[in-house]
Length: 396
Image 1 (tube, rainbow, N blue to C red):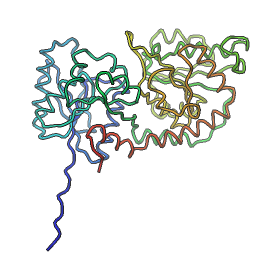
Image 2: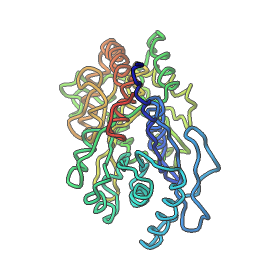
Image 3: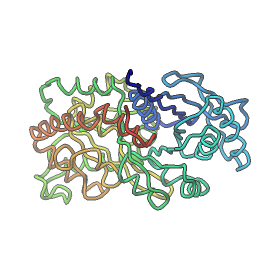
Image 4: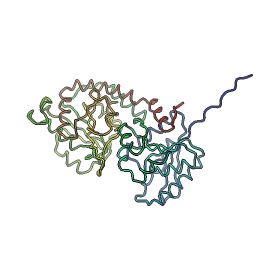
């Protein structure tokens, strides 16, 4: 008799509830999650929940972009939110049974719960992208704590720890678009002569320049021109001479940022650099520095696992991460990256002076950083982590 063959395992079916408007880092994380799911064979549909004034929710296959989303209406009352959640869930029901409803932003948690109950999904992962772990509303925190379907998902052990009083969750390290990752690795492989003046690069959304610690970085670099007797230079080999500062990110840059760097020598600002330009900036810098302040009360700021630190290392640039927050998961301390003792400019100046005094050491650290980041951002590993966190299973 012929040996019976088992039926093929059906592809897991996932619905991603996308926020109507997402910050660039959140949008990149969502794109990486979709790519990881699809790489493992999952069938992914994306849906942008409608606001109370919209006629219906919008659905689109993963990988396609529809018409521009309108920002979610602010200040909705609870009844309006419940109505919007129900209408979105009813629209999603037409998709048939689902394995997982992934909530792309914590504000959509209620919609995710209702959708899961109408579609039979057994899992509702809630993606956190940074400071939303501290800013979510009280009713969302209660939902996260008490509804068994919900599972928070963050990008670092720090983020998971910050959420642990509410609910223990999972960690998915940030993933990068395959072509962008390869572009950065290609730049790292190019050998360039060192320019006479060392370069420190920082990259962030330019309207967040204060929260990202740019004034502290500017003060610390100015300290390096001071005499060796300066308190911040003691024990760090004295002043190291001029240092070029390169600031890049999504713009436009506000007037206050322009005022901060106006008239400052060896300082360049790049608004909205192309991917090619940004990859070259990473690869030609001696050192990348991100100095984000960690504040859990208004004005809230902080980092869970900033992608820029990984991007810089992939391009062959050693890094300095914020003194606090979840950035320490993003580099090997003392090998590919360094952390100041605190958020003050003297503490940052000590680290900068020590590292910039030996550019050959920094170049070696950059090569190690590229190798480490290549292994840490392996697409297959990321896909496995996505499946484990979002579907509770290994990918096929």
